[in-house]
Each structure stands twice: as structure tokens, then as C-alpha cells.
View 1: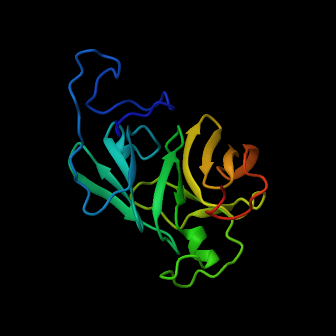
View 2: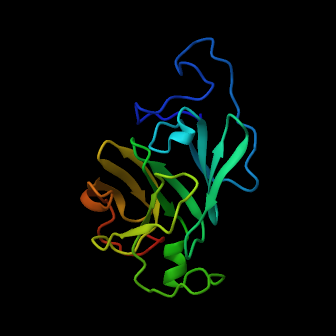
View 3: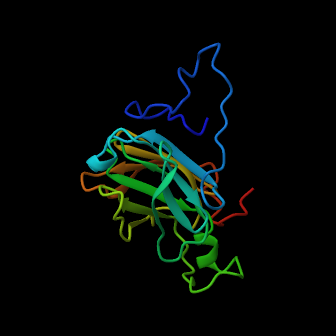
Length: 206
């Protein structure tokens, strides 16, 4: 269920009822976002932007942009991006709804030169980058800060999830990385588990 958040007890399911209910009807979310969506997180908003308190909303990750959609009123709250967005893949909000962390599945390959269609991304040291958005005001989201993990070899960050004060991140060729969320919402690597230590390729470890 795209509408369920199994990790964050502050976030409830939308229109689903108890996930373990025997008589729970099947649920499918119709395509309401104006464009392709790769992934999303849905929740009942309870953050500092009081205008949206109690609103059922989803954050959609849509290739070169991120959209916040009001599921109750079927309206787009905001749409935003960041410099160098190539394939905005997935992300997760903090329990206090003040910060959105997002990853890009293709920017590392672009910076390394592996994808010929990319432009203006020529950093050969393609360390994974996490974008950190301040979403305290949903109508006014600016350019994100960046966390560049230089403790790992160049690799692609894929899916990650917030649990308490940590982010648990899966990387293509760099295993599982655990990031500590600091008081100012910046990140620092706290732990990792990597079974391909002998390989420092971005996508071709076996």
C-alpha cells in the first residue's frame, strides 16, 4: 500500500483501515498526479504549517521534480526541484514533518560520465548525494542542502527511510548505510554494512 507508513508511528494510513483486518477491501490509488510518478509517501499532515494540519497528502517523486498533493481536495500544493535533477527516485519526511530527504537514482551515473544524455554533470567522483529540503512551509520550499557521503566509494543511493533519528539507506554497490539525523537536520554516517568491499564501481559489482 503506497498509503501506509510502517516505520513512523506519527503517520497514519489513508482510507485503508487496519492493515491486518481480514475484511479490508482492496485499495488502489488512481493516477492523480499530472505526470509520471516513480514513488511516493502519503500521510496525514501534522507539521508546523498550520494551514494544512490534518490534511491527507502525498509527496510524489516524479523524475525531475517533487510534488506535494492534497489527496482530500485533489489539488497540487507545491511542485519543486533542484539543480541537476536527473531521476528523482524516492524520499522520506521526518516525524516532525519539517524536513524531506530525497535521493536521485541517476545523478551519480551522470556525474561519472556513464550516461551520455546528461549535461553539465562532470564530477568524476560520483559520491552519493542526499538532498535535504526544509518543508516547514509547504508553499515555499527553497533549494535544498546536500549531504555528500565521501566515506563510501562512488555509488548510487537508492531507497531510504527515516526511523527516529536515523536514515536507513540502500545503495547499489555500497551496501546499507545508516545516517544520523543531527539537530539541524544535517546528516552524518553512523554505520554501514557492505558485502562488496573489494569493488568500487558505481553499478557493475558482482
